[in-house]
Length: 242
Length: 249
Image (tube, rainbow over all chains, first blue to last red; front, side, top):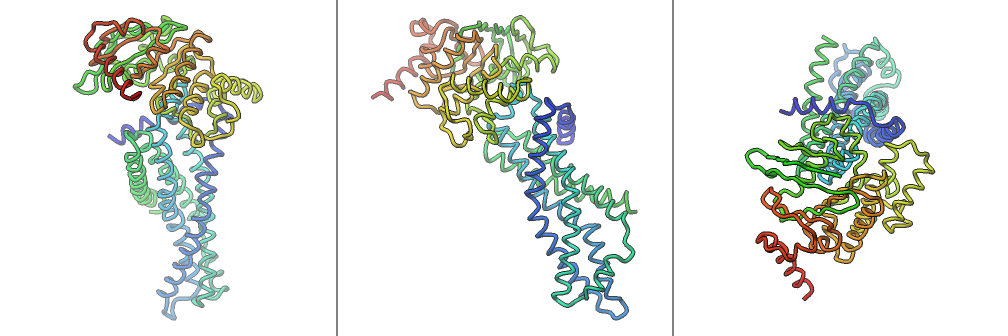
């Protein structure tokens, strides 16, 4: 039932917007709300995530046969391949997803969506499309920032805790670097951004009732988008890396 | 003119509209009254197209709205204005942006022309110096007035008001009622109002339609509603009168 309604809504969402300038303004507003406002949480999480990966990698590589620069290699690959795109997207699904579902859900129960429809505005396009475009556009930048911050977090805490030297870490993060890994991560990010924005929007759009149901829609939107991120993480990894 | 012919609507097994026909004329206010759960809101939502009817037809100045395609309906919707029960102002926009919203979407007016129109509409509903306030910063009565200002921004031919007095004190209700009546006559709008407020019936009702159990039970003027010998209408009017007297005492 959800799949059919979601598909129908997406058909409605991807229609021509009513007026270009108004639509562009909405996209910029959403970029600020969904992207720029998420910068602090992305930076903080990524920094500590990189730090923990570095310390754990150093702890696991105690053997004298493993060179110390492997800590840098491990941190880089873990952050780029998995932690930045998937973990940060899951966190954004919680932060951004709940905000989208509750915003649209509140608009539904307070008849604001009906008001748009009465005016002759395609409410789905007007409300949801700018969020999808903004997420798909801004999330890759957030993830690249997360990759950079994560690797820097590893460097800073690696040096502070003394588990790796700056030279070895910097050598490690450059060793056998594959640009394709970044491209793979960004492809995942775009798919996750679509899920993060469209799935909670779907749950918000079909909210019925009052404040309690808005809360429920918000929770359901986050749970569904998180599960879909995990599912698509597996599918895309199998398709792009296997 | 708005005309419905024998419209029906069911939700599952329950039929909530059993063939309602009505005519609403330009420059006049048609009031739809009746108890809660008898189908008033579904009737209004069906007329504006928020609910699809199962049978019958709805005409806007002879144009059959029920069989229209999405694009044709959209054109008619730009001729509609609606005042919602909870005002339905956009929370993220201030008063000025709320009233200007339909103009921004559907007109090619310059920013200056839009502002002039917004100020005209706000002045018409007796609101000034509130342009930059957000819906959360104004009272319920002011929200209703902003709702009316937004509804008339595009100079609609048809105005719909769903419970315009709900949640308002008697004095503010009177102000809103008078505004609806004045605007209807001044701009020759076809207005349909859903209400169960007898004050509204007496103040603005050119024509009154009583809905009972999904059917049009009674139709007449606000003057003869007090004299009718229809049992259900008398009970509804009598209860409203009694409650009003209790409130006074």
